[in-house]
Image (cartoon, helix red, strand yellow):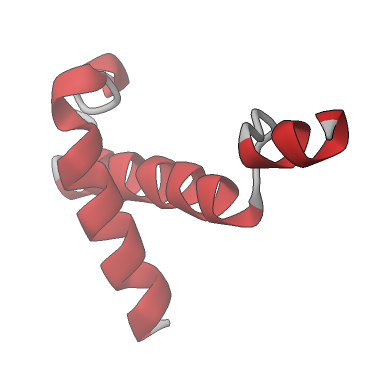
Length: 64
């Protein structure tokens, strides 16, 4: 019984989490280069901007 409970409460990172994290990074980097480095990178990669970064990064991955 204990093993069934362990599988239901998985805490390890799966492939979908890694995909989202890489999309966030790509999005932040693309947005940083789009602004020609005039703003600091930390203004793009923070908690408030993660959704925008993920959207831009995911779109970039689909197109290329």
